[in-house]
Length: 173
Image (cartoon, rainbow, N blue to C red; front, top):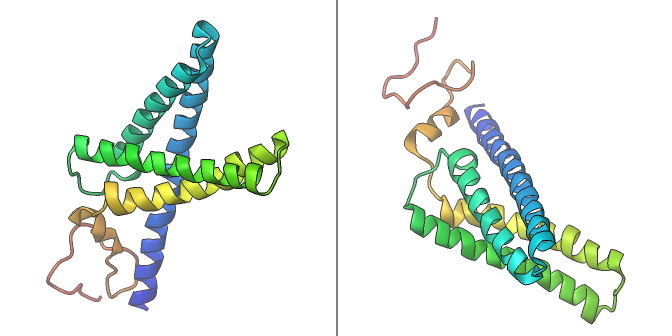
């Protein structure tokens, strides 16, 4: 029974991280689109606008994921984390571009709808799954000791134990 409860609490933590990751990603996406369109309207330079909006959105995404989504994970330094974060975002973009290229050029689906489905549904979905996995694995890898405590379950099966794991077993009443 303890193993089932531990699995339940660990799955709950994963789901909470996934939900927070989605909120942060949605906010960063809104920043990307907003800054891109604002700059495009005022400068008429699409490549510069997209570069600035992507860098800004990536920075917002890093800050949100570092301080909220993965806050219970150890820190390894902002420079290292941000560099990895930016690199892994590039890989996620590459995944979306690959899906678009395969659909458009290899399979011959050239309509606007097909391009949007390939890039913004399939590519974005696969890229987002890659980003979540890679951020947890490489950018914010280890849980802090106090974050592991909710996974501990006492023998009374009343729920998670508060605080750190203790050497003494809980007393039964």
